Length: 208
Image (tube, rainbow, N blue to C red; front, side, top):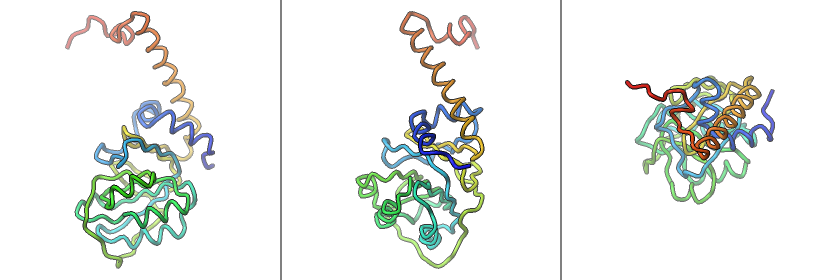
């Protein structure tokens, strides 16, 4: 069952860190994949792409079948010496209504991408171009940022990083995240009332 627009909007508000902790501290991508624009927030179903480094043919093919709201999740093998995504692909993705891009690799045309408002998460920038010769795979399970991602899994991302939610666990992940958010709000109220974090966490007086 696909996540609803309301569920995805709520996940954006809850945030990647809260979801990660609430679902049992799993599903977090490694911290090398960050948003080009720190204000970016994404939540949507993964459309997976397994491509050869420095060859973006598979990305162009993926854009023939990706659907509005999809998050392109591209395994570019962490290659840092090419930018297989730039301003032209960004324009096409926006025209298609895609929800964002996550790539284990680099992009280029960084200023144009940020100014477009399209959310892009990547390892960095590279001015070098790519070939269009080797066809990889789309909509297959991949491992990206140390996390196994299947087509349709829900990806949540913001300035803190990225987390994947199994597609059948969206309801429970939101419920657990709501509980955690409420607990944190209660802690804030207690701190404002004079309590300390060590008291609230039950570690007061303990030494390592």
